[in-house]
Length: 260
Image (cartoon, rainbow, N blue to C red; front, side, top):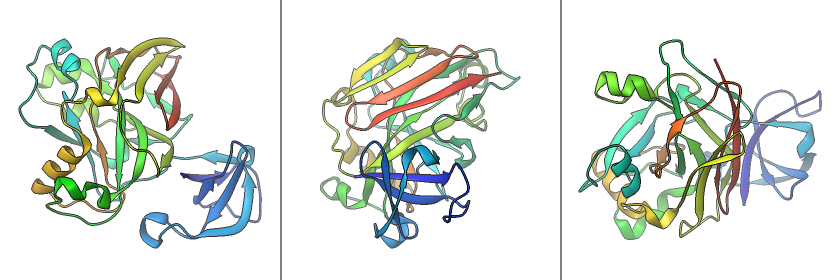
């Protein structure tokens, strides 16, 4: 089931506030009552055509975005690092979130802004100390993320906060896929149609159960929190004015434009 968040692109009886729905096919969205993360998935009778809406980021975390670094061996190698013995985590602010077709803004502070395609886990409920075998109990679904990074600032700072925290530096979407099960699906990134990253999800060093168990030993997760699970090799600079496409087989494709 694909859960979308949207606003009508023209005046309708639905008003202008963001709403949730189920993408039933390529053309039709069935409305949902309330926020499905808090009230459950409660379909309504009313539908709207997909071309009549603007898709938004499918979730805006009220709390945090937890990211896992160097979770593909080939990416650790290209960064000049060893494969970590346990997950390396850091945070991005929720103010970095944007949705499909929105603009990634290249900050004046940076001369190199990179793409990093990642599988994102959407947390369904308050959770702490989740055992590996219970991980699916706290997963609402999965979406696609681009962990945009000002690589020169990352190198200059020796840590990751500033480089990954600018507004617009976390595109997610285009929807939440509730029935997705991570396996050997392809994960990829393209700039202007040219392939830059391509790998399989089963190449992760630490799988989803391990990541969730590790993170929840450290901190409580809340409904709508995101976990970005790392990027494969092939990171590189995005070109101002170009379209960047990040995709995961079985979920879809997220497209954004990069502008100075």
